[in-house]
Image (cartoon, rainbow, N blue to C red; front, side, top):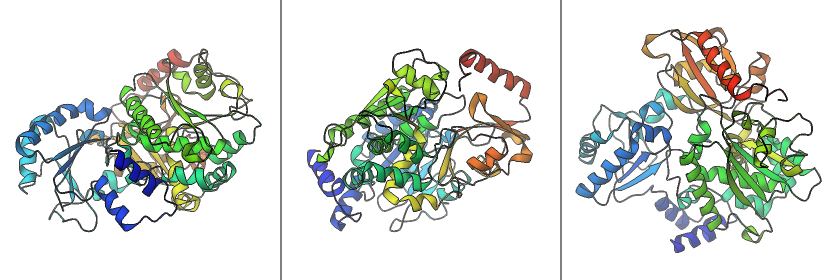
Length: 499
């Protein structure tokens, strides 16, 4: 492992050019398990997978492998996205495309693996195949990219989720991870990084849509010898679970995004503010932080560049209002988490009275992609004023539910009718609820509205942080509103006036 670490640091992370030597790429293909000599089975292991029984499935899989094919490798990954398909597994035989199967509970493992290992593919739970040039096709099996759930998406931020072992920094680096960070701290000044993100048009994905680069510049230009970066992973709204899915599926990309953002504002300390109870996500993120520190990506004088950074996870005390940035800061300082009036804004007077930038998980996940590919690449997707993609947690009465990523400009109707595959049980659509308990209800006549900060604002609608609840005719809106108002009364009443 020490040899692999040295190889990845010297031949990949510290390599100046964007193009690696062909021999290095061959080695990375082995780390990524693109070229395999024995079967590899990926099993989703996020929270929704565990609830559906993935741990029992994994145990049954290991037992089968031990008895029938000890050379087979079983890998825990993050969730692929469709929660109703859990536990999901992906099987790849040497030289062949990957095969995806859904709802694979423990009793299905033996007949499934017996079939696949003997080229007799069972149809019942088959989702599709996926692969690239050079891999053998499975005749008559559709590609997973053609499935309605995936066809309507543009998975960039979620590109790694479900595809690799989230507890392996080696595999993340082999997939291009941390190269943007190392390139940033070795080649750009603080101001240049802020300018690149500003030119990309990235806007905060927590709902408000404030320009991220502009926020960073405000903090950087505030005179201070200390600044802080806070990643808000509180995700307190009912029906939202995007952050948890990201943290469980691709924690290293968040660490990289936090590191780049911290460098851009001159912060040597960063905090991740998480909700209490998200132990699985927190464990994977902490492991990613520890591995990054072991590789010299965090700590003192990182790669001899004079930049210092430490990342600390903090768990909130359980209050809904602590998701608001001034209440979040108060909680981190050990005070009661209560929203404060603004100004001053955190970028000028934040944590411990110092300039502080607060970005949510999804916002920071975009940062490594922008620094790696450039601001023009980011602007090539989405709309003119809202470039990039948006992640939603589809819940409620759609036929399919889970975490999706769509290009900005996609209509809400496309998400409901195509990606979620309409309303289950043949019922009629009633509304979409965006933005959590204090969010917005969108009726059928407004479903043509695009996912765009400004277009939605013109209609009096906020995008929200990611909650997307589909409501059908069986739901009483009065009862639903009563539920949300009771939630707000218990969690926010008398506390939220400043915000």
